[in-house]
Length: 184
Image (tube, rainbow, N blue to C red; front, side):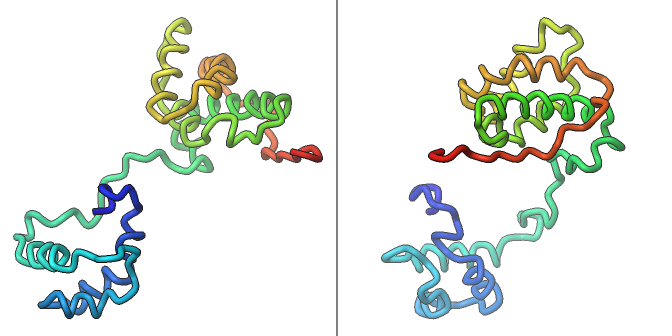
C-alpha cells in the first residue's frame, strides 16, 4: 500500500500501531480499526486487507518468517576504517581533503558537493589497479549511488587521485564547516 501511494510505510500505519496489532491480535476488522484509531494517514484504511495480512502471517510456518537479523552489507563506521581497511581509510582521507578544497572554493557544503555515503562506498572497495580504469569505476559506483552529473563532474578527478593513494595524508582533513556568505 505504501509503495502504491509513494509513502513511507510508517506514514500509512505508524510503527506503534503495528506493535499494538501484534500484541492484541485482533480477530475482526472492527477490533483492528479500534486498535489503529487515528494512527494512519489514510482516509479509508483497508482494514479487511490488513486483517487478512495479519491472519496470513500468524498462520505462516516459521520457515517463511523473515530473519530476525539481516546480514549487514553496509560498510563499518569510518572511525574503525584505519584498523579494518587501512588502504580504504587512506583513500577516504585523501578524498575528503580534496573535496573539502572544492567545497570551500565553490561555497557548497561538502555533503551537498558529493554524497558522503557514495564517497565512503567508492573509497571502501578496492579500486582497479590500472589508473586508466579509475574514471569508469568512480562513475559506475557514483551512478549506483545516485550521484548527480554535476557532482561527479566537479569531484571525479580528485576522487580518482584519492583512489591511487595508499597512505593517509600527513594531516587529516579538518572537519568540514560551511559558513555561508550573507545572502546565501
